[in-house]
View: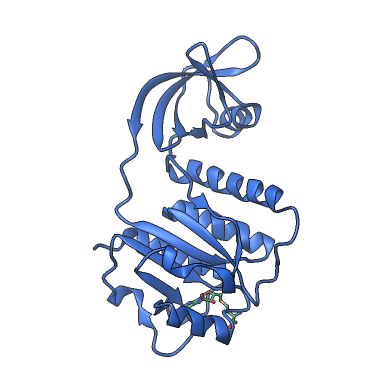
Length: 237
Ligand code: SAH
């Protein structure tokens, strides 16, 4: 079993010790079976902090710092261009992106995206960022991916993301990932449940995206994120 982890952004640092927030404290005790003296890993803004849990006597759990290390930079910076998806699948796609080590997520409101962002975006961004932060506890990443607010596909500034760009397309003449030598900074675009529209496909190709295949089967968009980003995270350069 992996080491229990907590994110420290939600905890208070007081008099040299961390006071663990109630939600994470409950998880550490009830699910991860931590107790007085357990050593856990705190994740904070690119750093991994070894902590020893202590009962601070106030009903709260305290964590004392033992050591700090800065997380090594990922071998490849991955930018995921992700179409907005329906709730459950979108949450799953975000988790997969965080677990596979995506650096930044750029959200596209596509023609065939079921959700159209209109109101309550602030609340949604908060919920999505929480999913990403939670997923880093699973994977042990010190920082979650940076999540950019959704932009309508036609207004998105594609050249600003990065020079090396791939689009997952269900089409002929796509290259399998295994045949590509990926560079150190790469973008991958994954379409919505209803797929890219013909106009969006044309635009991606015109913007210089290389069309790639994720295999012979048609994957759900969230699975496509796991397969594509999982490959990019591990492929040599
Ligand atoms: N509902 C559509 C499929 C959409 S899949 C249909 O049945 O035709 C959603 C997105 O996942 C696609 O736009 C594409 O970006 C990606 N994707 C899924 N499977 C893929 C594959 N085998 N190769 C490349 N991209 C794939």
